[in-house]
Image (cartoon, rainbow, N blue to C red):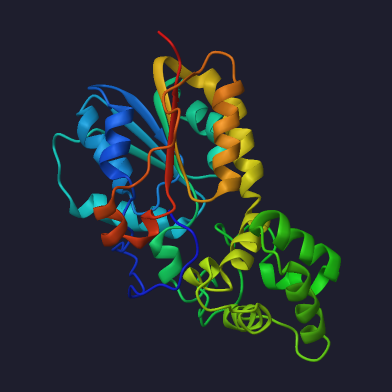
Length: 314
């Protein structure tokens, strides 16, 4: 899963994924899935990490995978139906926020797991879906919800919130220095023609943010931080991560590992501090693991990925 960037991939069908999991080999190395083990992947996405873990735990093993996005579950279910792998462990999937994993485990009569994996942010499949507003030039509404049946879409919030609230969200979650300028333009715009489409918000950001040749900010689209901020707020992503980190250690077997891939500093800071400050966890990554030059070249969405891990001592 990744941060916002304009997608170049075609829109995926229900039976296929265009998502490429980042840090694939590094995740498998640090989790070291064992035969007969039980692992929880809270961010199923295109299924790349989950199915690779299932292949390594063998027929007696179990992978429990959740995602808030029903479309992700449908794609992986179709993929499993097409791929016949007799040596693969059982894969059980559920539509759920990963922070609610204890309820999922309880429903499956599982008390503890050998490992947790989170791959935060967006998947390429979500970016490629033109109907949900995740990409800057999306044809559909500025929705930004992972689960379209819960919460309020972003375009509705931008109609309700005062300029101060909009600016605060964009600055806090996107670290966007021009948040007030963007907020004022959104409020001005809605007085005559309420903003609803993703492309409309992207256009506002591109018009009001100065573009100085040669500066580092030119490496990303001017809309990146604003889309990120609104998506985080709409889905309460940081709140979910904090709830997960408080609950997960109690459900980890001795020797078990928690591995988390983050894509921006807010997430990475939360993970780093939680691993450091939680009694009963040993930090395995003093510095985050990052993609090598080859992966960054082949998969640009890996450029900001950071993998951290911690273990429960034996």
